[in-house]
Amino acid sequence: MSSKPLKFEEMMPHFHVGGHVHVSEGSYKPDEYPCECPTDVDHNSPCFITTKQELCIEAKWHANGKLAKFLAGNWKLTVDGEKWGKEEPCIEKMEVVEYKCGDDLHFSKKITFGPGELSPGFYKMVLCLTFCACDGTPGPIAAFVECPPIKVYDAH
Image 1 (spheres, rainbow, N blue to C red):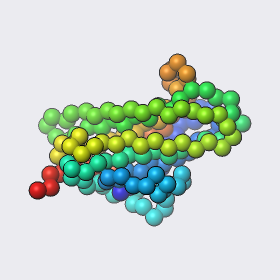
Image 2 (tube, helix red, strand yellow; image 1 turned 90 degrees about the horizontal axis):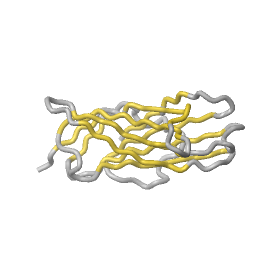
Image 3 (spheres, rainbow, N blue to C red; image 1 turned 30 degrees about the vertical axis):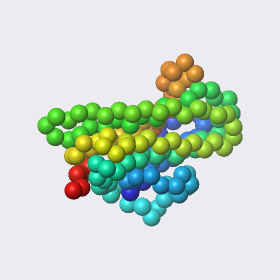
Image 4 (spheres, rainbow, N blue to C red; image 1 turned 180 degrees about the vertical axis):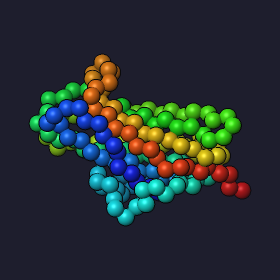
């Protein structure tokens, strides 16, 4: 398991956002990790999973500031990845999280790769979080994090 802080590009005054991403083998309880990035987790430790396990990438973030209650739109969460090697197939998964207005907002979303979805090999994945207007146009707030290396193997 690994946890890393999201790197945000904030282009709006009076709006603050922060968060982190957890990468884990299999599922875990939704409230097992707080919204703040834990200090007792190795941020760069690689994940090792079998082809029979689920890989879970969960983002948790929060937003506040004077403008938080006036924004409208959605958060678009995308995981882009590639398998290292001669074929290097690309992987992409996307989820949308509705933005709800308020003073102190907390958001959370998991993207999972089910058993057998990833073939054996090494993977490099990047999670991108973008605030989009109601019509889907990307806005001025975005974040990303490079996930640690992920090794998928066959367990016989």
